Amino acid sequence: MTAFCAAVAERMLGMYAQMVDEDESGWAEKSLAEVWKVAAGEPDPDACAVALELIEDEASSGENSDIGPSFYAARIVDLLGLSLESTLRPEFTKAEFVANTAETLLSSLDFALSGERAVIYRRGDQLPPPGPLVSRDIVADVEFFEVLRRVGLGVDAPVVPAAVVSELRRASRDVGYEYGQAVQDVI
Image (cartoon, rainbow, N blue to C red):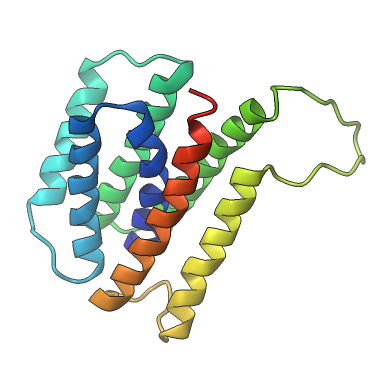
């Protein structure tokens, strides 16, 4: 579950890097690296807790906008926080919340990229397929679980081998790069 949370957060960091300065992006990447270490069974016992405290302190002291890039950046930091929490208290609900939050963010971006054209559907009408970013994320989730299946791991595996973590992280970064390119059109 921690590796899944880290994979989703890694994908979102591609967008985050487009919205914030280099120091903030670097800090987020270092914090996420600690989550990947936990997934691989090589944790620094205090690193994730310290990073999570910094996120919580920033959330309680800062004012976040409800629109624009700062809104998206704040939600991505929330995802990072959930990934950090998953190292301390792994729970299925955290992984589910991470996935749902990412889908909501990507849906919002898909809406913006499509020209923000609202369509009202009547009850029983067939809904349109998800937008390109949400569709890509669904594929990325499937690829994540395919890698675990291929190496014989379930979602309840206590540790993911370092080589598998490297593969998952690389694939997540590649998707994050795609998201970063797409978000440039919105911001």
